[in-house]
Length: 171
Image (cartoon, rainbow, N blue to C red; front, side):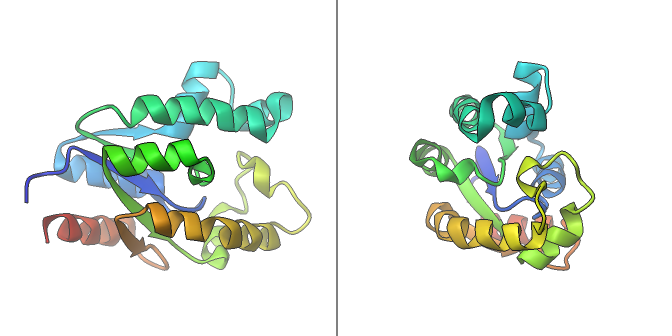
């Protein structure tokens, strides 16, 4: 198989998209991109600030533009935000423009990896674990329908997951 030109990582917050994406990009000799980091670079503020001033809708609009642009960059592994798949345009761009890998993990594992992170506006709630479960129930069908491959990150190191993705891509 020829080396894929664009690989897009989707999945919930805390699944390891950024960490695994960086490893994967390095292994493949590709650049690494992150849609959330790109949005922060473009706006000059962090994501909680965008949510505070523009709400989730304003953030999703910015995210849609960033994903449209980033999914056209060749030779790149792109990590997307957990909610990137909520918009049909994003799902369409991801599916049409590259290989999509869903990094799956349980809400409990997500909670374990994210509960100290104040940079996640959707978790600033009374019961973050319950919120993660609700988000997964809503988003999992979208992740599954968008992905070419599903790889579990549950209790696994980034290197192990990156290696499995490489095997799948070359298999």
